[in-house]
Amino acid sequence: MAPTEPEQLLSILHLEDSLADHRLAVTVLRRSDMVFTVQHADCLESFKRLLTGTHVDVILADYRLPGFTALDAWQITVEQHNHPPFILLSGAIGEAAAVDAMRLGIADYVLKDDMTRLPHVIRRACEVHQTRLLREQTARDLAASQKRLAELTQHLQTSIENERAAIAREIHDDIGGALTAIRFDLAWIDRHTTQTDVREHAQAATSMLQHAIGASQRIMMNLRPHILDQGMVAAVQWLAEDFERRTGVPTQVRTSSQTIEVPNAVQLVAYRTAQEALTNISKYANSSQVRIDLSDSEGVLTLEVSDNGQGLEPAALDKPKAFGLKGLQERALTVNGWLDISGSPGHGTSVILSVPLGSVASATGETQ
Image (cartoon, rainbow, N blue to C red):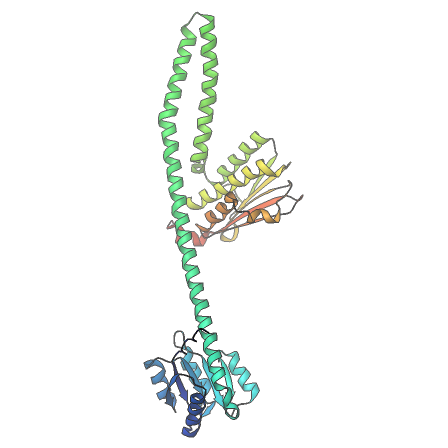
């Protein structure tokens, strides 16, 4: 058999005005082979001094003491960070009072007439305490990890948008300029040539060139939505009109007002959310109607994109490669918002972005 691990040394603080009862408790613990050290306090002053000045793993306390009760000692204990488990060891407390004390957070209670239970109760209380500390530390680590992930997501989104803007500028300045110059040259050739075949080729090339210019403009719009310079409402209406023109699906936009002023970061998140939602509708929804609702009432920007299509399977959001929807959720978090996606087969899908505008400045550093 493998050797058992040695039991951890416990530092016990015993609050007891009866020296005989204190000695009896120590004797019971020694008979249990528990490894421990014990400090004795018989008043609140000495209890507080020992609790704050030395390391304590567990506290034992009589309930009624001269001039105070264990509940007074408990109030001192809870003021300590990660305070040790507190166990009542008393013969002067009824079961109802003991239960009330445990509701306050006291770990357990043992009657002096049943002191043989004390070693087991101490071990169990310490195990529960360690489990609670581990759970709290795990929660703190998880919260810190989520915060770092949110910060990384925000940094990546900002970097992506900056890179998109840079590419859009290059397309406009270099490719756009070159295409425009070629169009002028083709127009000059068309005007000055007398050869029919040359004119036909020039006109065909001009038509293809016009197509390329339109494609570059669409690419620039997707990379950097300069329509946002005209405001949130105008940008959403442009998306809806473009979607309806490309798909033929009637798309209605309803807004709480003609102008909705929100920080640039929120504008971009809302725009990308609407853009991705409309893209998913065109790919998967098979809908005959789309509605977009945009509102900033009660200090919350709300964008809802809904359709009457085939709906969303419940498991769709949990697919490992559902990056589009997951990306929208991460985008919302960068501005302290959240995204709700709901739907059922045959009843359409609804994507709702909500952003409390009062919290945006702290998330992005922008002012409204």
